[in-house]
Amino acid sequence: MSKPKGFEKPIGVRDYLPRATKRLRRIERSVLDCMSSWGYEPIKTPTIEYYDTVGIASSTSDRKLFKLLNNRGQTLVLRSDLTAPIARVASSLLRDEPLPLRLSYHANVFRAIEEEAGREAEFFQTGVELIGDRSPEADAEVVALAIASLQAAGVKTFKFALGHVGFLNGLFDEALPERSEDQQALKERLLHRDYVGFREHAEALGLNREQQEELEGILRLRGGLEVCEQAGALTQNPLALESLDHLRRVWEALADYGVSEHVLIDLTMIGDFSYYTGMVFEGYAAELGFPVCSGGRYDNLLRQFGRDEPATGFALKTSRILDGVKDPSPEEDLPVLVLYDAERRAEALAEAGRLRSAGAAAVTRLAIAGEALNDASLEAESGRYSRVLRYSTVGSDHTEPAARD
Image (cartoon, rainbow, N blue to C red; front, side):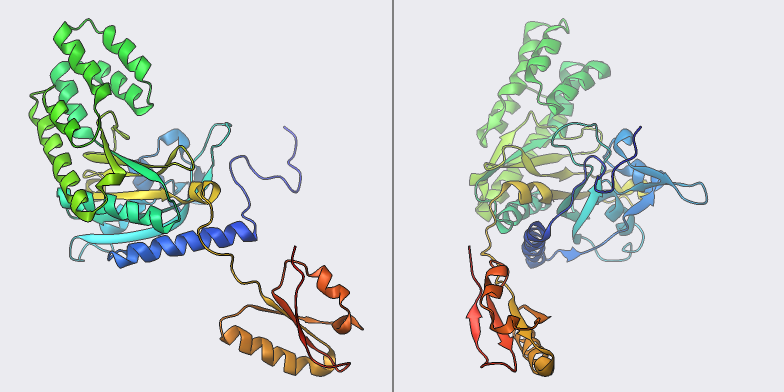
């Protein structure tokens, strides 16, 4: 294997140049401010965690975790999400805080990837966790906040799809009792949106006509609130019916939030069925064509840290929003360039300080001989500064706009 060159990076990571970094920070600030206005408090957790605690509890498959050993021989992981670390904190440092807990975050996460196009080994997430409330109201709150957060990030056109793990679990238990392997195979196909494979596997199960129609009917369960009625006609399983009632109540709350127009029910959605326990959802931006938000209920996670409390939440894929959505913010004001010669340095630096105190950005620079009066210097600063302020012992002081493209 050849040694990497000095300018090369590992596959799946990237550099964020100044303009992209400014945009990412604007998105982060706007979204976190939105979350704060809903009563969510910011939290930060370490970049590395113990594999035997957070690593195992994470929804990320083991083969996608970045693992390393410390000097004691203990296995550590780079965080692959923020939900498991926050569950650890909620079960320890925040254990005595009154419930429910509302926590928000923005951080980079790491996942080992195959060498395939479009995959990132390091990316940014911004999200919330609502801990200690199992009601439909809590699920509706995080969906409504996810919608508000996407709008704050500058996403103009989007749609959210809601599903429920309990509905599919109940229906599969009814249609395929004691056939867990076949149930899992069908769930895998739904998880990967392989609807052709779902039909083929269902047809190969040797079911009677009624059971076959029950399974294939799942693929038509996408639309508005009426989908819950259609789904209720397919099953008599108590868990499935209870899950449909939960979704109805979430939808009704979203209607009162005034955001149901952005939401559809998709009962083929299952999320990570080994992790989520109830409602699951994804947000799709029209500008991008793939999910920019995902979340749901994970009532079993905190139990792994010794605290049996329900929880729900979501994460925005901030890196995807940065790449695919037009910057909604106006271009930031360019800094002022303060040119000076040695004799008037104190005066120039004082003026730069006043500009900064007033909220403007200022760059100071000692002018080379004759530069302060040389209009050619403006051409050299094209597009970098809003204006050039000169302090020189030669000629009069004056300010000129910098040349723009």
